[in-house]
Amino acid sequence: MALSSGNSRRVQMARRFTEVFGAAPTHLTRAPGRVNLIGEHTDYNEGFVLPAAIDRAAWIAARPRDDRRLRLFAVHYDAAAELDLDQLSPDRVQGWSAYVAGMADYLQRAGHALPGADLLIDGDVPEGAGLSSSAALEVATGATLLGLADIELDRIGLARAGQQTEHNYIHVNSGIMDQMISAIGQQHHALLIDCRDYSAAAIPLRPDTQLVVCNSKVKRELAQSGYNARRAECDEAVRLLQQALPAIKTLRDVTPEQLTEHAALLPEVVMKRARHVVTENVRVLESAEALRRGDVKRFGELMNEAHASYRDDFEASVRPIEVLVSAAQSLPGVYGSRLTGGGWGGCTVSLIDANAVERFCGTVAQIYEHEIGYAPDIYACVASDGVAVSSFEDPA
Image (cartoon, rainbow, N blue to C red):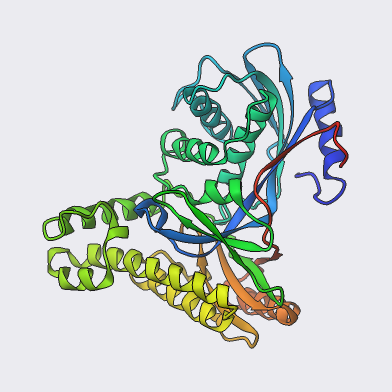
């Protein structure tokens, strides 16, 4: 069972660390999960995304060692593992410890001299729900190892190492959004991230609104779902469009008008995938402008349009998700609702009036349980800061 969150987190992590490893920890790291407000499968197409870090996170208590060993204990699994910093390579480790191994491996390849360490891992980001529990673990691991080595925190470097870990240790050809927002999130803001040059702009969220995440409890393993297939279809779209548009590198470089003009070059399914990504980039940029103006009505309309595109052109939704989205969109006080994350299950995100939260949660849960047979998990989320490492000598 995961340790509880709140003000007691620091004390409980220290106590459990001492029980497991026989000495007190020196460092504590928090790296948040995320909810993507709009912009799905645009990141690996070098496009635009608009995520927010959330107040659910991966936590690591740590202590350096004087050897080259990483001793790990995962509270959630009640399981231990051990790694050798000089014997790290893809496919030598599976399961949850592969995320730690990959981060250590790619930080060392980037030239960082890392110490051995004892690491106690915990968190409250639900797994398989599309809220980036894996990215939170990756960023927390990397920040912890750099902190123990007294190396300045390179947030973009952390995100890149996390993406390499996903590609080569986890075998998911993901973009960089999840690791980026966990590393650089900003409280009370979403971030408009350009996944080509990694630039980011903070977009304020109106204080009279609330982000609400509904977990369908339909878990999906990205490597086994359609995720990698969709990425291959996007790459195929680029290859075929380059016959008419030789300068393009990714679908980020294609306008909706160009896609329509050259649609005959693409098979029907590939055209649908490309249309989602190309129009999604336009929606993300318009969404950021709407939030800057405080126009949550228009932002919600764009969320709804994005969901329809994700469902129909990208074909990444499932019935439980459709029940959640339909229920949310039917309620007063709801600006917009959509599937968030990699697809094929996981969570929806809704932007609602802050005064409508209680009614929203009760009604959506009731409809979902009636239609699907069990209750969803529903979280009212607060946009939070990115990864932070502190010393146990610092005040809590």
